Length: 212
Image (cartoon, rainbow, N blue to C red; front, side, top):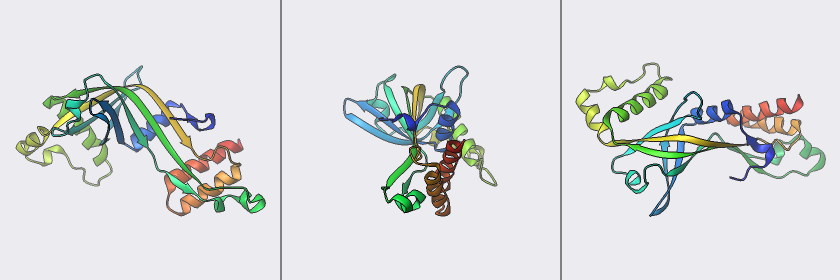
């Protein structure tokens, strides 16, 4: 990924937040059949002294876990909210008429080696963790024990675990860093007013940091 210096993000906490708040990752693999991509919800498991582990699962019928060799290097792309930026939102456009449209976004690329787990206990743990994470916002969280054990056992047999030990991460946060603070703020305010709050607020924070 091409990353101009002003867009490069290496802060561990920021990269982890992008992954955890946007868990649907694009798993990019390469095998004898060529390049492929699968879109999976991942759980980021943090471990002391390491970059962390990504855990997910795929359908047993998905040929991915047969076609990609154990230990193969893979890439997972996590993308936060993105947005079109109109020149009309920049105050400086009214003064100089020298602005063009662009697109802002935040992405993290996580590289590592993949391990597939055709193991009932492993799969159950991964599903339990994913369920707990994503049901946390519900007023009455669903639990695996809400369904008959026989049913859950049968469903778990239909999936295979995926684990990726992260070896390297790169982040690109394109938030208008090359613009004046007033222009970043103008575009951020416009996005918030259009209910594109996540990236709008990120731009407003960027503008505040530029003022410092």
